[in-house]
Amino acid sequence: MSDRAKTAIVIGTGAGGGMIAKELQGKYQVTILEAGGDFKPLSLPINQLARFRHSGLFFDARLIRLLFPNMLAEKAGNMVMVRGIGAGGTTTLATGNAARCDGALKALGINLDAQFEELYRELPVTTEHQKHWTETTKKMYAVFEEMGLRPVVTPKLLDAPQCVGCGHCAIGCPTGAKWDTRALIAQAVAGGAELVTDCKVSGLELKGKSVTGVRAKRRGKKTVFHADLIILAAGGLGTPVILQNSGIPCGKTLFVDPVLCVAGPLPGFGQDKQILMPFISQQDGYILSPYMDYLSFFFNRKWYLPMSDLVSIMIKLADEETGGADGGRIDKALTPVDRERMERAIARSREILIRLGVPKEKQFLGTLNAGHPGGMLPLTAAEKDTLHNPSLPDNLYVADATILPKSLGNPPILTIMALAKKIAALL
Ligand SMILES: Cc1cc2nc3c(=O)[nH]c(=O)nc-3n(C[C@H](O)[C@H](O)[C@H](O)COP(=O)(O)OP(=O)(O)OC[C@H]3O[C@@H](n4cnc5c(N)ncnc54)[C@H](O)[C@@H]3O)c2cc1C
Image (cartoon, rainbow, N blue to C red; front, side):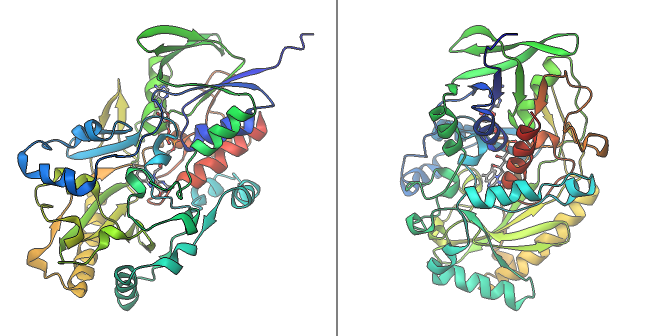
């Protein structure tokens, strides 16, 4: 028998990829393939960039990549899909919210208690930021309470004392206070894993029920990687494309958690200088939370005021699982059920703004966008013990948002990482 170390390839470095690479390194000799490069925060000052808003330069949200190469924005009808490309995946753009949302997985018989316990032990999950809330945040919290919206302080992946409350969580935390999966990749690499960046996987070579090669392009050159075990974690929009390119179909079951901000003018309010999403109100089918929306600020003409003079409430929906990404083209729209939910949420948000001092006629909406894609190869009860879809080759696992069974309408990072841990333990 050969004493060669078993090898594994992990594709992607976001929530799922970062966690499973860290967990597998040691058991396997891991190679991590990442389409993007190192993460770089948005470097130009917001006020300086904001001056260009009137020039017509920012006419399409997809141009955000020119300012911020790690953020990819794509259009699906009138919705803008946002995701992170590069080391850390979309976790680098996240606002650090750390919620346990495994109800649908539990209903399938998948118990993640042990994995969540480990996560809470290993990661800096905290609500300590509340101690540093500004008067603006406190005022917003009070209005939510007064309206019976039961706001709950958001647990964050955060080194709270390092947070300067600049509100830049989603464009690159300048102090490193916000945790993201680059920390896990660093751990995997310290343990001997190899990280290959600027390496975009296009498809898998299959023979019978095995993956025999991973086709990729690295700095313009085609190459094929080989390993005993392959983990796909290219995200809810990246993984299905790789599977489909390899002849493995995915379902038309895409969810994205659509986001819409309701905003208005409030001179000197200073919401731009607060941690994003400091608290969350859970409603029936959606959540509400204070959120300064950079996408709307740069690309939506109604958001022409300075950021410090705006107030903005985010609506995030749990959407119906209908949509796909055939050949990389994203096909997703709000269903009548989603729209009804959205209307209810808009009415609630308008009432919040009125209580904060913005009359209804001065309020406006942001750009419809979404950043939680997943669900196109959903786990079912039949896979509760294997976490392996039978349409996949035996040595191929998916460990990202693609396998979530339902839209969460809530922050998914922690739940994806718990699943990735459980898959790693099975391997
Ligand atoms: C602005 C914003 C804020 C958010 N805030 C939060 C939050 O506070 N809390 C929370 O829980 N969730 C948040 N989310 C959502 C969360 O970040 C994602 O749901 C989560 O990161 C998804 O994990 P994943 O592993 O499925 O994919 P990702 O984290 O997107 O990782 C996919 C990885 O695969 C790589 N990749 C893609 N295609 C290829 C390819 N062909 N070859 C090689 N590599 C590839 C990507 O570069 C990336 O590294 C936010 C999302 C956005 C957009």
